[in-house]
Amino acid sequence: MYVSAASAWEAAIKLALGRLRLQDPFASLVEGSGFQELPITFSHAGQLLALPRHHADPFDRMLVAQAQVESLTLVTHDDQLTPYQVSIAWV
Image 1 (cartoon, helix red, strand yellow):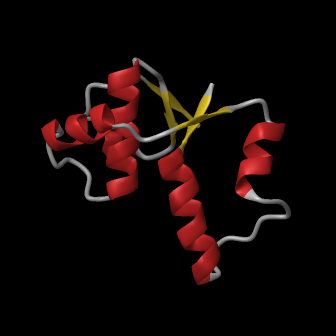
Image 2 (cartoon, rainbow, N blue to C red):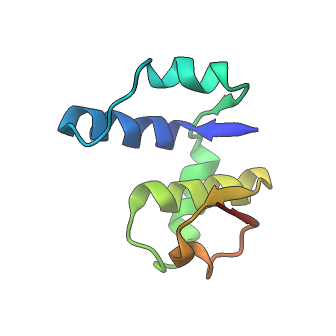
Image 3 (cartoon, one colour):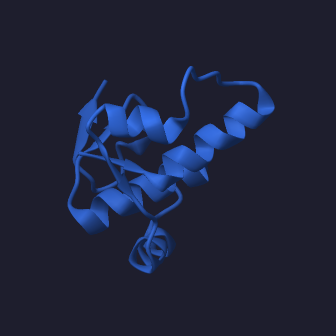
């Protein structure tokens, strides 16, 4: 199981804005949970360009692109991602 670098980037922005608080660094929490880091690659960026604009959030769109390229299941509660052709596990 993976956690995208896009999620770390979004968390860093929210931490800087004071909209998120973590007891430990994001990377430590991910590693401690047994997840692996999923970097953003040129293939992911290329897939992002091919996505229809069903969703405006750039982080969520990158997660969709990564899930498509890597054949992964996206874990989300965001029903706006339903129109994308990607496997989704709802939380």
